[in-house]
Length: 184
Image 1 (cartoon, rainbow, N blue to C red):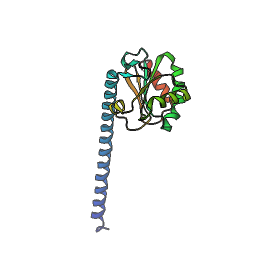
Image 2: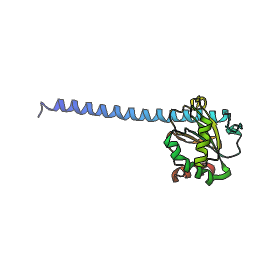
Image 3: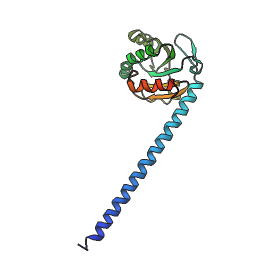
């Protein structure tokens, strides 16, 4: 038994060192992720304040000047099935909050973007601002790498970033938006 004791102690020491290293790495990664999210949020808020777009109806929109406390910037494309899937909940969200919400849809179709916007707008009864971004100028500023991509601002502050299909009528999401509206 004595001859096995040194190797057992060595293995246990190595396992303890390995466990401590893993815990250190995980905590360090979490801290980095939180810092990165805060940096992205600051960038998104800065872009919100700088953004000036022209809709397909030739209206110039500056989100920071909109009177609504909630502004949704939704990046989408007509060929993107998850984008189309989220539109019914976005329309319902818009109805729920009424005059408290403005939606700016940034369309990334590269060809016939205005035609594709009109077709999708009609099919899904989309009643919000539509901006064509065929060269991805706006998308690139917001670091959009895939569609759909939605940013939800309340009083100019980023409240939610969705890098995938978002159910705008999800109870937890609605609670977060309502709490932000109340200043909580």
